[in-house]
Image 1 (cartoon, one colour):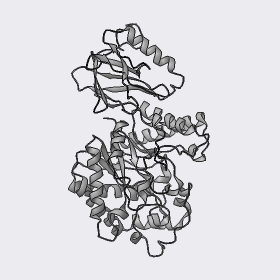
Image 2 (cartoon, one colour):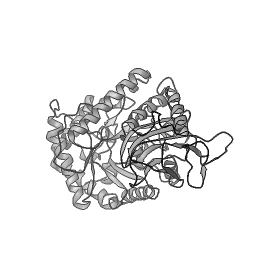
Image 3 (cartoon, one colour):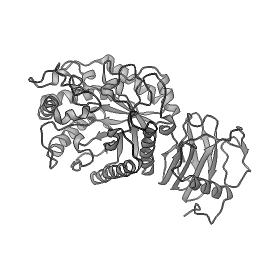
Image 4 (cartoon, helix red, strand yellow):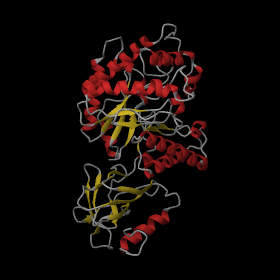
Length: 481
């Protein structure tokens, strides 16, 4: 199964620590084709005072998990932090966990878009992380907070896993040779996951590298099974807020490859827990280009991922971050790029998939065989309000509209191709005995759905595939191979 989702949410970094409570937002996420969310939780919210747990907050978390599961959306529980605590211009830990010499009210004045510099420049931030990883007492509190979460919501079959700590930092502990990651962070992960499994034996642990070594992690293989490597992937060039397509695309490809190689070395599946680009990038259209380039690389590698973020902004942007798919006015933005079809379930081998937001066209190539469960394509309702035309190399398909899914059943063992393009402007439907290879959906008509995005010069590729499949040309490059 392939997971495509979104983080909820940056606006939860401040009290009352909840992203939203209106069920309409869950309906919206489901209509966009997302099958998972990474839900931000906060140690401060779970344990506001030592050994005192906020059960009202935990009840609200359970309500959100239930809302997601009712729509077939999985939840990755993320114990989130940035800069250790909101008293240090970040979020996460309660002030009572500070070492004695750190003033919770000081705030260090490291807010704003370059807040991440405080991981290095703030003595208080570094001292808090150092104290946390060297203090068994603080780790015990953190573990017990996780146990309260696991007991409350871990019984849901739609819990994807437990992201133990967002973007952990070494503080003042050296990591030049991986001494922090393997001497402190790795044992910490194993301790937390083992404890969670005492109450939720099937729990899957998501582990992240040291935040300042995101692309050069020295983590060594774990002793536990059932883990996922979950780094984040932000293009450093986006931080400059100026878009340059060629170096952006090349650098993103290199950074993704580094994560893929690290996951392979650890023997773990890869999940990109965060990626995205700020809306403050210039020129204005470049944000969508940057995110589309990122999604092209991720879906090309069949990589699970979650976009940062989806904030229903009833509070000011945290540290001037501006990544959300909703602006301060409650208006949607970037959906034409972020909302896209993808292979969500495949018993076989993915080879290629591509979505063109400007034309709303989708093509996929994969290997599978008859007799297995169908290959499932997520078909977002938001992109396809009128239906879609479908061309298949072989076999047949069913459109399960309520689930937003296309189920494909192959006609033979081998390589298969699928192409989808928008319904005509007249809204006409075509019968099954149209061109050979044009597959009708359940109900006897070719239902057509509407797509958008420029195919990066491969519009002719789509047209060639479409004509080839429609002809049923056995000598075409799209034939079984």
